[in-house]
Image (cartoon, rainbow, N blue to C red; front, side, top):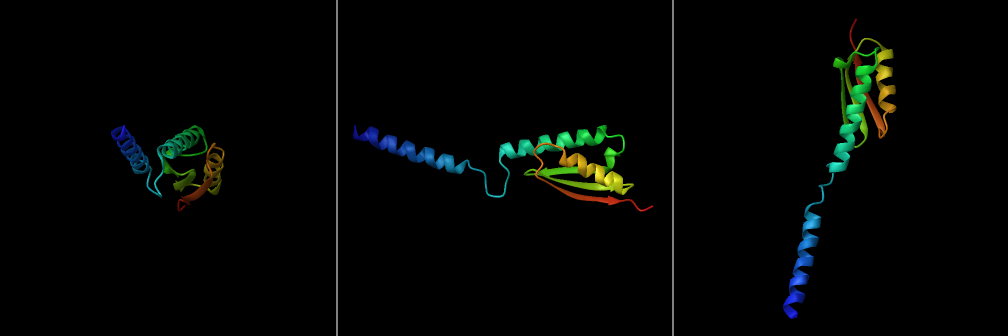
Length: 105
C-alpha cells in the first residue's frame, strides 16, 4: 500500500514536470497562434492576388500574433492604401504595419 502511494506521488510530480516542460517559451507563438497567423497570411495573399489594382508579386505579407506587416513597393498611394484596407478586412487581424514604399518615378 505504501509503495502504491509513493508511485502515485512520483507519477503526479512527473506529470506536473512534463506539463510545465511542454509549455511554450515566453515570446514564442503557440501552435494555435502560429496556425492562426498562417491562415491570416494566406487569406491576405489571396485577397491581394485577386485584387486587379495590386501587383501581388511586389507586396510581401508577414503575420505575427495577429499583427500583419506589409512591405514591398507599389506605384501609387492608392495601391498602398488598398493593400492596407485588404489587410484590415481579414478576420483575426489585430493591427497592420504598413511598410510599403512608393517606387521612384
